Each structure stands twice: as structure tokens, then as C-alpha cells.
Image (cartoon, rainbow over all chains, first blue to last red; front, side, top):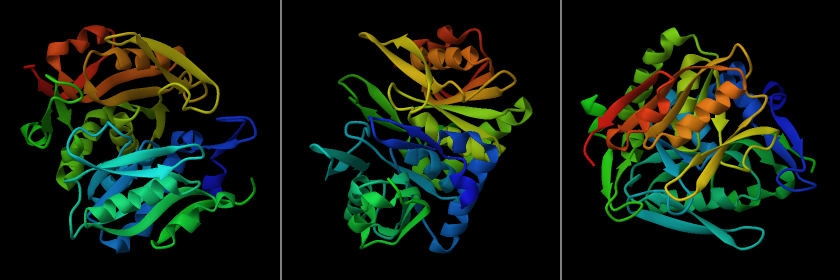
Length: 174
Length: 174
């Protein structure tokens, strides 16, 4: 997927010195870039026979909602604490310093649901691991975890060994 | 659009006592609800001849990305401060107590671009007014502002008198 990789912008020293941020807004802004990204995910998911797409706040909402619309299934947002108004299930995960958590509505999924979880970036894997736990805690099946970009040098894949994982653009170097 | 309105859940006392929160996650979760919402916005925009869709963080990302994908145009996120990595333009707006601000990438739009701005909810209108200013400051034209829900009793429409505004579900009572 070199054509999609070429549409991602490297922004040095963001969010802090020494980090090269992978900026997907240049891909999203490009009509062909957006279309081909969603084409790719939709083609990839066609055989999964999903009942919903789960997107992780907030860039996962972008790909997740468009993918759900393409596949003709519902969309489920997984959000930061305090954003979802009804009864939620919460799962915490470790950050570099401290912890954070994610929430899902308790009635968003149930036994018999089969979903993909989508986000823009696989970094350390903490948010995606927490999201897998939330979906499974509701009794639903995770057919696959999808990410546009994988920062392979952070080895987030190691946190997701018990679930199928598909990433489109793999960044090896730091 | 009574069929869509019926898919929105009222959550009392969120985010604080006395407020009835309009929860769109039940609409998003419903395959028909999501599809018909995007159908509606896409049909509505067909004659606008857009070059991009602008979505406001973060529920505006959900409708905005799916709409951009349907229309075959690019997607531009307007985000809370500090989230966009490249050079940004910023616009502040008033909250009940204090101010907040929104940002757009300076190279996201330019003269000749023609966009719709989309969000889930029109409340007091501050975030949408700020977004209109950001888009126009980059030289682009706002064909229309789109919201799924309008809380008419908050009179946000009064802040958007200089731009076409289309809302789908109007909530009159408090």
C-alpha cells in the first residue's frame, strides 16, 4: 500500500521533541486516499460477516463510521471516560506514565455480535487491548483488529496475540 | 425524519442534573439508522458540488467521514487544541463558563474549496460558529452547515445567520 503510505505526512517533534508523528489528515483530505483506504478495509472485512464496527475515539471514528456505512452495519464508539451518557463498562490501560481508561455502552453489543475494532494507529497496543477486552466482556466476538498504521518498533502486536490483527502500513524505523 | 428521531435515546441528568442528553449511539448502532442518516445528508449535499467535508471533533467525525466517503470527496477534521500536528489556525469560542478553542490545519483548505461543516448537535452554536470562521479564514466557501439534531430552545441558529444551516431533527422543548 505504498500509494497510501505516500499520503501520510511525517511531522517531526510532535507531540514532543524526538517523536515523528504520522499525520493521517493529508490522506483523509485526498479523495482518492480516503476512498482507497475504506475500499481496502471494506474488501478485507467482506468475509467476516460482521454485525457492527467498533471505532476507538477519536481517529478510529473516522475510519470506523465510513467502514460501517460501506458494510451496511452499525457503528459502536469506544470513548474516553465520561463521554458516553448511558450505562458503561470501563477498562483501564497503562500509559507511559500512569493509566487511562476507555468505555463502551453496556447495551452496545451482546452475544452473537461479531465485530472488527478499528483505529488509525497501532503504537504500544494498550488502547486496542483494552477495547478487545470491552467487546469480549459484552459477549461479542472480535473477528479482527484493524489499523491503518503499525509502529512496529513499539511492538504493540505483542499485546494482541490472542486476536487476529491486520495493519496496512508498517513503519519499521523509529 | 420521525424514524431517525425514534432511534435517538434520551438520557436524563447527563452530563449534569436537569439536562436531558440526546444520545445518538443508539442510532449509530442501528444499521438502517446509520444508513438512512448518511443517505439523507448525501442526498442533501449532492447539488453542492463540494470539494471536502469538514467534521467537528469528535461526533462530527462519525457523520463527516461517512459523508465524505459517500460523496467521493476528502475529509477535514476540526479538532480541540493540541491535537493537530502541523501548522494550525485557531479560533476561540465562549462556553457557559470561560472559553475553549478549535483548530484546523492551515493547509487543509484553500481558495476554491467548497465544503459543508457537519456535527451531530446544534446547541448554543459556539463550536459551529468558530468552525465557519476557520474555514472562511482559509479562503474556502461554506456551502452549508449540517447537524443531525438542533436543540432549538438554545437558539444556536442565531449565531449562524450568515451561513445556510440544515438540521434534521429539531427538539423544541427543554
